[in-house]
Structure formats: structure tokens, C-alpha cells
Image (cartoon, rainbow, N blue to C red; front, side, top):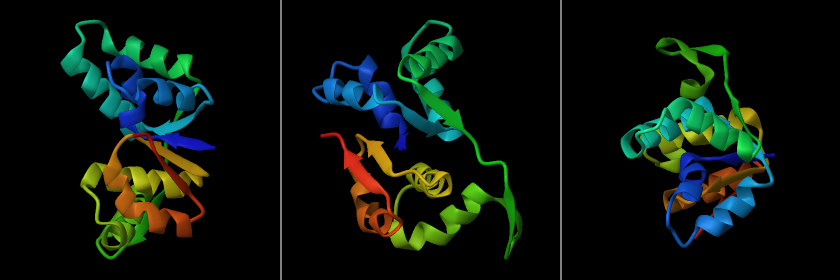
Length: 141
């Protein structure tokens, strides 16, 4: 199963040389997280005047992208945390990414996907880490 980060979800809306490749990837379907949905809606709110929630949902439906969530929590050294945050704290030193990218990595691990598809080259910093977890990184360039 493929996990799409937000950079790929918005490419069909842009006049960008990676647009066609992104659409080809999205057409195979897959998942994103609630973080991906929030980032998509945030992008749309800054760039469209339409009713952004239905627009975002239609975009995801058109490409058969399901939004998944992680509801579990875990005890940590600072108390109860969501599993997403717990994993992010554990892998931060290994991948050295910005906060939102680190959270996407957490979702990828927790969803146990086969492939992370992104248009953000920053994720290349996590390539070896993802490979050790059995996840292929595909960067659309």
C-alpha cells in the first residue's frame, strides 16, 4: 500500500513539471493520514475561494485516497502520548526531519505501508531508516 504525503496530493492542482507523475502515482490509490488531510485543507484555504472541505474530499475520492487515523495511545516517560507522537519522538534522532515530515514518517511506520510517495526531497534524509523498516521511498522529481 502507498502512503501519500501532502506534497503529492496538491501537485494535480499546480502547474508544475511533476504534475503528470504525481497523477500517475495517485491514480493507483492509497492512503494519507489525518495530517495529510489537514495540510491539504490548509493549502486549499490559502489558495482557493471555494468551499474547501468538499473540494478536498472530492480530490481524495477522485484518486481513491483514503484518510486513515491512529487512535491508540502509549505510556511514555512524560505520560500518555498518541502513538504517532510516541513514534516521532523515538525516530527523531534517526531521521532528523522537520516536525510535520517526522509525523508523516510516524504514520508510515504505524500504518505499515510498503511505499511513501512524496515530492519533498527532504524525505531523502530518511531513506535508509525507511528501508530498514521495509518501506520504499519514492520522491517525484
